[in-house]
Length: 324
Image (cartoon, rainbow, N blue to C red; front, side, top):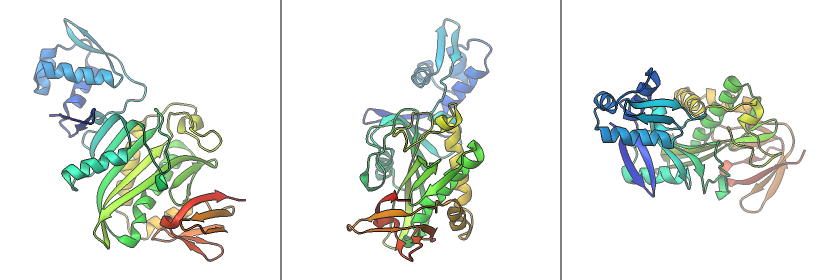
């Protein structure tokens, strides 16, 4: 049965294959007419009051449900539903309407329950979304904003491999499933037609020389208007139609599962095949140094080799600007 919790005026759903909301929605979708509360209660194994509360949650998520003496009837669905019930049988999902940052929310979950299960936190809106170096990540409604938290064992020097896997996976999804000519911009962005569409932020924890837990924060412009016209784009603006965010995140998770199981040699090659190499780039480093060069390739540890022979590490790079 679904368990409902409340933290900071927000609820999250702990999902499994017996998720009562998923079953309820399936029953409503498959019915020719109205279904009585008594029948729903019996199918779900919950009280009629609990059925009524679940109906209310579905209505909050954009489903139109007619209530009468005969029972409940589904009359309309949201254009792009995003709810934990859509991911039954997958990683545990925490779907929020609004939060400060999904990364912070994931940290709160880990502080309460520790490591263990993989999980995903999504939010329709982030009020304090952030990118690298604590820069603001604009998170308007219609975008896909989530944190993927998972256990993995990597030596500290290879911690970038998780970011690498996410960038390769998302680039493949954009290319293969949505027909977009996407490329990776080192260290953590994906561009289409020279405009940013995806950003990835990584945080990890573990022992001094071994990483055991990763939180990957991902922001994707999907059905929202591009937040910075001329510099950013969205899937809807590229394809001319609204797209399913839940379908997109499922494709990401399927790809990540595959790449996390593949051998050590495949991922760096895939990454470098997708890397933007053309044009000279100006790099601003953390200690005030600035250097320019043309990207050549990225090592297994995430270091970027320039045509000048200089190597730049992801952690020391504050900003990149294309100069030609």
